[in-house]
Image (cartoon, rainbow, N blue to C red; front, side):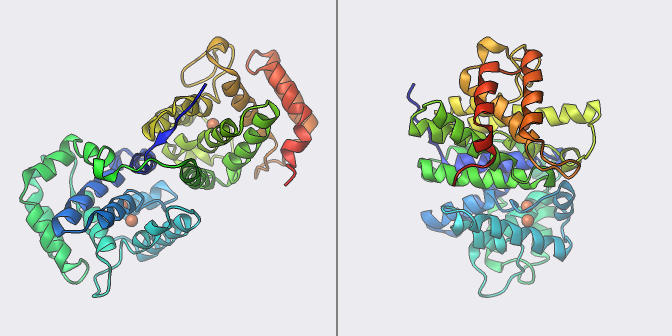
Length: 396
Ligand SMILES: [Fe+2]
Ligand SMILES: [Fe+2]
Ligand SMILES: [Fe+2]
């Protein structure tokens, strides 16, 4: 099987923005909508292609440093608390600086709430206006009825909070009904995800770099799972090698593991961090995560079908009792089964605030019970347990 992954940078950052915005219905697609408004302002103001790309990509991830839904809602206020503002901006900056390929986005993200000063770069100044405009719009009213109010609100702060040149440009642009109609109808999505000027196929190294960033963000949503995705990724790579997979496929398995819980970005943290058994309703929300993982990975670009399955089927069970698709053994190939076993192995051997990591013996006993129950693949459980020691303490 040959796999040519063609993940695109804009689609990939759009996917993560969309994922983060899924936690609250009122703010759905905030990141992409801001990116669209920013891109329109940026091209109207005459930024060159390279700066326009930087503007759009930074806009997509401008709020990547938000941790909780509460912070997100507080930042939606027109004048949010300055401590929350600086915390999420700094955190976004720090996250982007840990990457190899997205460091250029860090500075605009750091400055996207900075009040106007003469030496402030136009890119964060544009993101700031686009962000506030997006939040001023009432989504349940005709957008064209709101343009005067929104423009006036922004004008009220010209030269004090907002960059004068950006405000003038936006006020001019606001006369164009299609700007608002694109936002209202969802047509803006094409301008972001399918913009030919923005296309850039990610190399494997770039995709791994971004996947590591996503894994860090997912893992840090809950103190219970601080190393869950990275731990699973290391184990998936070890087992893929043991199974004789070729080097590229080993990397792809690792990539799938890094992304396996990306749908958790759409799960509110009250549910993710509840240190107790979830209620039925909460569990239903939790179960959405693999559904979102499946579709989010599909959004990254072309050729990701295998990674999509290896990542998103980790809660499927051989007897059909898993979620979200209720697949059965004949629909789950070895890679999917491996990921499912490793995910349980990783969870059991992880430190949790309410219990210590389980020993290898305890872990093996639980996994074998799962095999007997018809949930997990017995051969893979045996193989994983054979290498259990190395999986827990990988030779570096
Ligand atoms: Fe923000
Ligand atoms: Fe925002
Ligand atoms: Fe999961």
